[in-house]
Length: 213
Image 1 (cartoon, one colour):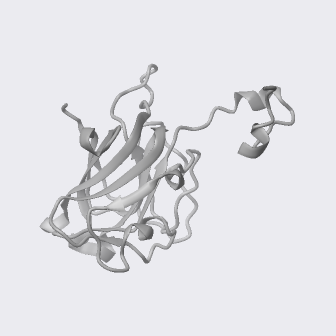
Image 2: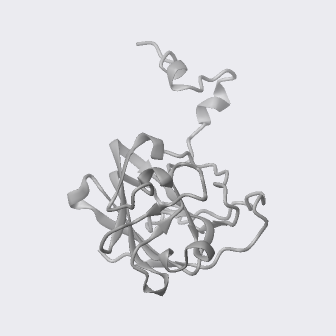
């Protein structure tokens, strides 16, 4: 299945503690130059999944992708392509990924081409998006799907058990790779029921008592 490639330009520079920019129209990559993860409306669903990587140097494994520290990073240690596999216990809707890369710090270790794959298991993954990056320095957030939704204004989420992010190539033909942060984001939750209920249940524990069984 042919997948259109998307070219994401270099991130705009800004002070380290800059506030996140205004969100662009759905489908447009969000560039965030600060080192801390941006505040976004899409929920982080990565905590629900099991994370693994194709290879790593000791002390620079998959845990560095989600520790919130911009000075740590996943460091691959094996033949290309390098990849991150995120496995969910059930099928979930995946809207976007948010990834932190730093060309000024990592040079030839910085990914230049990413392929996003999804499926029900490691054996049936299909390409859903390919992205090229030009000397990124900060957080880039973009849709994992390239299929427009019904109104044509945004992209449909991908429903999958497994998501895989593949580093197809690095800048300057580098071999190993560095990724300093990664978030897997679901669709924005529908809060319509909050409009009719003045005192809605907000936690899973409370929601379990929200209906008569």
